[in-house]
Length: 293
Image 1 (cartoon, rainbow, N blue to C red):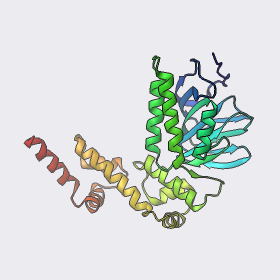
Image 2 (cartoon, helix red, strand yellow):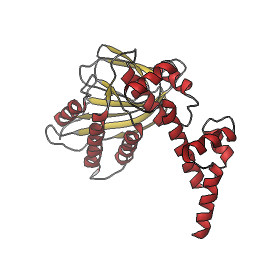
Image 3 (cartoon, rainbow, N blue to C red):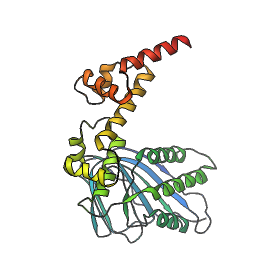
Image 4 (spheres, rainbow, N blue to C red):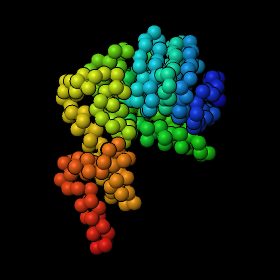
């Protein structure tokens, strides 16, 4: 039976965490083999510094900010950042002062994994940006859920989920330096919009989170041929609002407050521009449909 590497203990500098431990079953030579996975909400004093790691590892930032020193490179971490390390690769991770950081990680071994990492463009020591966090988070959550169950098929199922994560990582974009290039800026902004559109109140707020001016942010979106950042943010907010209205139990005023609008009138005007009818009209349509049903 192959022995799993002795992994360092989990950090005590986290406020919330969920872990699953795998890799106890035998594996074929070179086969992808999971050892451990987790989700951590790191406190503001969180910091780790290592000269290397016993196994291969992927970490994905989904909320908050921090800094990363990886194999001699210095980078800022924002939601959507994904990075890898392993034996002989020094790395240090810190949260930013007064901030927290939420991340997923998975530890694994096998030459198959090394091949998949290279194909995804995130060989050990690399960092990249995930444009659409939601699907990746869904797979990580499923991995954690399956990894916590007692089942003979769990090792194989979790390995398949890791393969999905690695293949999805092929759609990542490179992040290379502390000063974001415009394509990096676009990737970070999109990741923030897609993961935190509920709490983002304005494009100015978004630009500050990315670390650029609103003008720089708008240019970054234009240069990649994307819609305006304000259009993407509003679209996300209004789609979410429509879902809340359809689900029932939410008042228009509550939804306006939830999405960061100062008044329900402003929210209703934006909603109508987006869909062509007011929030109350949608509620009435749904109510009539329910009565007919």
